[in-house]
Amino acid sequence: MAAQIEERTKQLDEINKELDETKKNLQGTQTQKRTLQSELNTLSGTIGQLNLNIRGDKAHIQRLGLEIESLGYDIGDIKTSLGDKRLAIARLFIELQKIDYLNNGTLIAFLRNKNLADGFFEAQSIASLQNKLASDIENLINLHNIYSFKINDADKKKQELVYHQ
Image 1 (cartoon, one colour):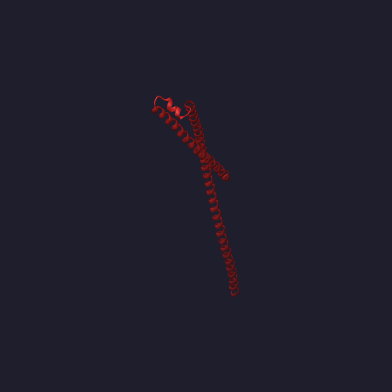
Image 2 (image 1 turned 135 degrees about the horizontal axis):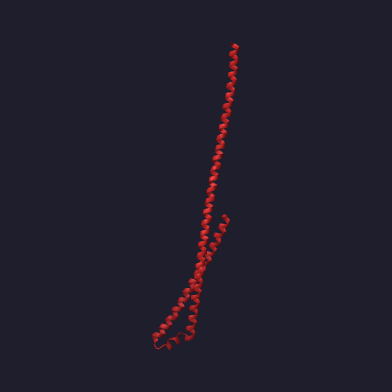
Protein backbone atom coordinates (compact mmCIF):
# COMPACT_ATOMS: atom_id res chain seq x y z
CA MET A 1 0.00 0.00 0.00
CA ALA A 2 2.91 2.34 0.67
CA ALA A 3 4.03 1.67 -2.88
CA GLN A 4 0.60 2.57 -4.15
CA ILE A 5 0.60 5.78 -2.11
CA GLU A 6 4.00 6.66 -3.46
CA GLU A 7 2.90 5.84 -6.99
CA ARG A 8 -0.19 8.02 -6.55
CA THR A 9 2.00 10.80 -5.10
CA LYS A 10 4.24 10.61 -8.19
CA GLN A 11 1.15 10.71 -10.43
CA LEU A 12 -0.15 13.65 -8.46
CA ASP A 13 3.21 15.45 -8.79
CA GLU A 14 3.19 14.81 -12.55
CA ILE A 15 -0.38 16.08 -12.81
CA ASN A 16 0.57 19.17 -10.79
CA LYS A 17 3.58 19.79 -13.10
CA GLU A 18 1.35 19.43 -16.16
CA LEU A 19 -1.18 21.75 -14.52
CA ASP A 20 1.55 24.33 -13.84
CA GLU A 21 2.76 24.09 -17.47
CA THR A 22 -0.81 24.44 -18.70
CA LYS A 23 -1.26 27.53 -16.46
CA LYS A 24 1.96 29.03 -17.83
CA ASN A 25 0.86 28.32 -21.40
CA LEU A 26 -2.53 29.82 -20.64
CA GLN A 27 -0.93 32.94 -19.15
CA GLY A 28 1.30 33.22 -22.23
CA THR A 29 -1.75 32.87 -24.42
CA GLN A 30 -3.55 35.58 -22.39
CA THR A 31 -0.57 37.92 -22.79
CA GLN A 32 -0.46 37.17 -26.49
CA LYS A 33 -4.21 37.79 -26.70
CA ARG A 34 -3.81 41.19 -24.98
CA THR A 35 -0.98 42.11 -27.34
CA LEU A 36 -2.97 41.07 -30.40
CA GLN A 37 -6.05 42.86 -29.08
CA SER A 38 -3.96 45.97 -28.50
CA GLU A 39 -2.59 45.81 -32.05
CA LEU A 40 -6.09 45.26 -33.39
CA ASN A 41 -7.35 48.29 -31.46
CA THR A 42 -4.45 50.36 -32.78
CA LEU A 43 -5.18 49.26 -36.35
CA SER A 44 -8.90 50.00 -35.91
CA GLY A 45 -8.04 53.47 -34.62
CA THR A 46 -5.71 54.07 -37.56
CA ILE A 47 -8.36 52.91 -40.01
CA GLY A 48 -10.86 55.23 -38.36
CA GLN A 49 -8.40 58.13 -38.67
CA LEU A 50 -7.78 57.37 -42.33
CA ASN A 51 -11.52 57.23 -43.01
CA LEU A 52 -11.94 60.62 -41.33
CA ASN A 53 -9.04 62.01 -43.37
CA ILE A 54 -10.65 60.72 -46.55
CA ARG A 55 -13.99 62.28 -45.60
CA GLY A 56 -12.20 65.53 -44.76
CA ASP A 57 -10.38 65.51 -48.10
CA LYS A 58 -13.65 64.85 -49.95
CA ALA A 59 -15.31 67.77 -48.15
CA HIS A 60 -12.28 69.96 -48.87
CA ILE A 61 -12.34 69.01 -52.56
CA GLN A 62 -16.07 69.76 -52.75
CA ARG A 63 -15.53 73.13 -51.05
CA LEU A 64 -12.71 73.96 -53.47
CA GLY A 65 -14.93 72.99 -56.38
CA LEU A 66 -17.66 75.31 -55.15
CA GLU A 67 -15.16 78.11 -54.54
CA ILE A 68 -13.76 77.68 -58.05
CA GLU A 69 -17.29 77.73 -59.47
CA SER A 70 -18.06 80.87 -57.47
CA LEU A 71 -14.85 82.50 -58.69
CA GLY A 72 -15.89 81.60 -62.24
CA TYR A 73 -19.16 83.46 -61.74
CA ASP A 74 -17.31 86.42 -60.20
CA ILE A 75 -14.85 86.48 -63.10
CA GLY A 76 -17.72 86.37 -65.60
CA ASP A 77 -19.45 89.25 -63.83
CA ILE A 78 -16.24 91.25 -63.75
CA LYS A 79 -15.63 90.58 -67.47
CA THR A 80 -19.13 91.86 -68.22
CA SER A 81 -18.61 94.89 -66.01
CA LEU A 82 -15.23 95.57 -67.63
CA GLY A 83 -16.85 95.48 -71.04
CA ASP A 84 -19.63 97.81 -69.89
CA LYS A 85 -17.13 100.22 -68.34
CA ARG A 86 -14.97 100.21 -71.48
CA LEU A 87 -18.03 100.93 -73.60
CA ALA A 88 -19.11 103.76 -71.27
CA ILE A 89 -15.61 105.25 -71.35
CA ALA A 90 -15.51 105.01 -75.13
CA ARG A 91 -18.89 106.78 -75.36
CA LEU A 92 -17.77 109.51 -72.94
CA PHE A 93 -14.55 109.95 -74.85
CA ILE A 94 -16.45 110.21 -78.14
CA GLU A 95 -18.84 112.72 -76.55
CA LEU A 96 -15.94 114.82 -75.29
CA GLN A 97 -14.25 114.71 -78.70
CA LYS A 98 -17.51 115.75 -80.36
CA ILE A 99 -18.00 118.63 -77.95
CA ASP A 100 -14.38 119.71 -78.33
CA TYR A 101 -14.66 119.51 -82.14
CA LEU A 102 -17.89 121.51 -82.21
CA ASN A 103 -16.74 124.12 -79.72
CA ASN A 104 -13.09 124.44 -80.65
CA GLY A 105 -12.36 125.15 -76.99
CA THR A 106 -14.11 126.42 -73.90
CA LEU A 107 -14.01 130.12 -74.83
CA ILE A 108 -16.00 129.49 -78.02
CA ALA A 109 -18.53 127.50 -75.95
CA PHE A 110 -19.07 130.61 -73.81
CA LEU A 111 -19.28 132.94 -76.75
CA ARG A 112 -21.45 130.70 -78.92
CA ASN A 113 -24.35 130.60 -76.45
CA LYS A 114 -26.99 133.33 -76.17
CA ASN A 115 -26.05 134.21 -72.64
CA LEU A 116 -23.18 133.65 -70.25
CA ALA A 117 -25.21 131.24 -68.05
CA ASP A 118 -25.78 128.85 -70.98
CA GLY A 119 -22.09 128.98 -71.83
CA PHE A 120 -21.19 128.35 -68.21
CA PHE A 121 -23.65 125.45 -68.08
CA GLU A 122 -22.10 123.92 -71.19
CA ALA A 123 -18.60 124.31 -69.74
CA GLN A 124 -19.81 122.68 -66.54
CA SER A 125 -21.27 119.81 -68.55
CA ILE A 126 -17.93 119.31 -70.28
CA ALA A 127 -16.12 119.37 -66.91
CA SER A 128 -18.68 116.91 -65.54
CA LEU A 129 -18.11 114.58 -68.50
CA GLN A 130 -14.36 114.81 -67.96
CA ASN A 131 -14.78 113.99 -64.25
CA LYS A 132 -17.09 111.09 -65.12
CA LEU A 133 -14.51 109.83 -67.62
CA ALA A 134 -11.74 110.02 -65.01
CA SER A 135 -13.94 108.22 -62.47
CA ASP A 136 -14.88 105.50 -64.97
CA ILE A 137 -11.23 104.99 -65.88
CA GLU A 138 -10.36 104.64 -62.20
CA ASN A 139 -13.22 102.15 -61.73
CA LEU A 140 -12.01 100.25 -64.79
CA ILE A 141 -8.51 100.02 -63.32
CA ASN A 142 -9.93 98.79 -59.99
CA LEU A 143 -12.09 96.20 -61.76
CA HIS A 144 -9.09 95.02 -63.74
CA ASN A 145 -7.12 94.60 -60.49
CA ILE A 146 -9.98 92.65 -58.91
CA TYR A 147 -10.24 90.56 -62.07
CA SER A 148 -6.52 89.74 -61.92
CA PHE A 149 -6.83 88.82 -58.23
CA LYS A 150 -9.80 86.52 -58.90
CA ILE A 151 -7.97 84.82 -61.78
CA ASN A 152 -4.93 84.21 -59.56
CA ASP A 153 -7.17 82.98 -56.74
CA ALA A 154 -8.97 80.59 -59.10
CA ASP A 155 -5.63 79.25 -60.37
CA LYS A 156 -4.43 78.65 -56.80
CA LYS A 157 -7.64 76.82 -55.92
CA LYS A 158 -7.36 74.68 -59.04
CA GLN A 159 -3.79 73.76 -58.12
CA GLU A 160 -4.92 72.94 -54.58
CA LEU A 161 -7.73 70.81 -56.01
CA VAL A 162 -5.25 68.90 -58.17
CA TYR A 163 -3.05 68.40 -55.11
CA HIS A 164 -5.93 66.90 -53.09
CA GLN A 165 -7.02 64.54 -55.84
